[in-house]
Amino acid sequence: MILRLLTVLLIYGFVRGKPFLDDFKTKSLTVDIRGRLLCNGEAMASTRVFLYDEDRFVDEFMSVATTNNNGYFKAKGKAKDSDGKIEPVIMFYHKCSVYIKPKFLCDLRTRVFLDQDVVNNPMMDVGTIDVADWKSTTKEHCSWLRWFLPA
Image 1 (tube, rainbow, N blue to C red):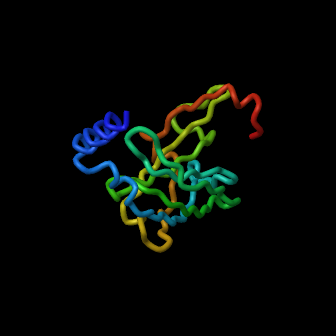
Image 2: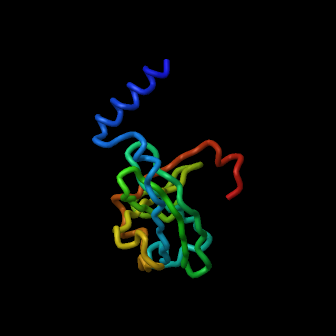
Image 3: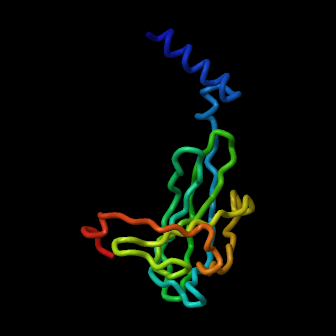
């Protein structure tokens, strides 16, 4: 049984091009950002901003922040990746009518991919993000759980 497990781990390492134990040697990488969210020029107040490390299969949650009344937010988080490089992305759910109006029990989800400059640097300003400019990364997200969860 142990021999079979070791064989699988060895094959896994050859397929990936590096040994399996290298996954445990990676160091944490930090992302520390600030910015502002707008909806067609108006501040998006009380919007939760999620910071993720995008991976091939499952994105790694790093942090969550909430915008203030003027749409400003700050988020800081850490993540590890086996290749030593993270792909930071911010994601937020909203009802800002961009090109589609969300249906009942639905929100719009916008994903904004960040540059590698924000990784392992002091706080970086990602600037003002107007949802109207991000139509291609805005999709509808629906859930029956909205019946039971507070807004």
